[in-house]
Length: 335
Image 1 (cartoon, rainbow, N blue to C red):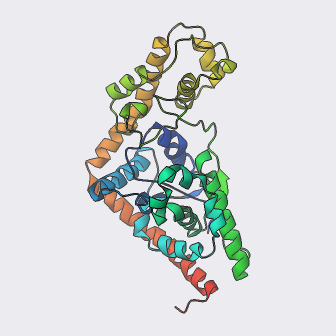
Image 2: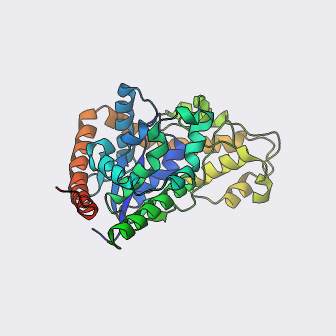
Image 3: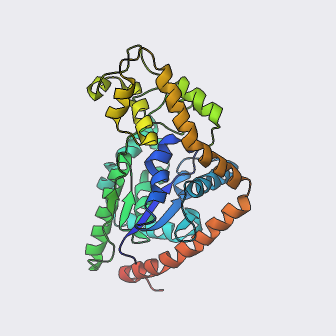
């Protein structure tokens, strides 16, 4: 194993959007020069809620296309879909027997996703943090780039790894994966509600910028993004209690590379947001135009994407299978 191995994944559920790109996909390419990287399309996580099979296949290819369009090199690093490596499910079962029910009950995402229908939620939705731990530990990953909403799950993976190591007497078998927080990782919120995270599942397509949106669509969504009736603030303190304005400033900052104070100084005091939104739309279109075009080109050649995933799957299995064999030996399975 290399000194630093990164593992991360994105669910193929709905269109990838601006928040997915800024929070995850863009950073995948940036980590390539300093780490060995394994990037997964986590299709097994996707089926914790029912997915239309044809839509799932299409979405899996789109996520892989996004990785490639963002600059991930599939020859020097690994891109694959999770279901190509049976070891994910096999290790998850072993780790289900290590994880404690009390640990899983503390996972806030299950409560958020299941809501009032908790008793009707799938067992997969309840247990998927253990599968997530298996995803990481199967490759003995040392680092995982995650957003704020996934930190609790990474802490669970560390707890599971530590308990497995202690239970089997193999103190250093699984490394305890560390969090990689992207620099300036602003939380991207809905264009229609600054208090809600930008989401693939939001019924309003106007709430997000999809990676498949064309230039006109991106510009229209930004122009229609919700703001308020007050002028742009004079400083960052003026963003308090103005979540929609703060969100647009954060998006501008993430795309342009300017800090919030610089952006605010540029537009401070303007009575309406038309000039600001026009400039933001131009920045967004110039940033996403090449990515959207490359994704479109790749999706016209699905045979190539499938070949990338198959090759990545074979290389991922070559790493995973010896780890799983060692796990089974430590547990005491006869092989």
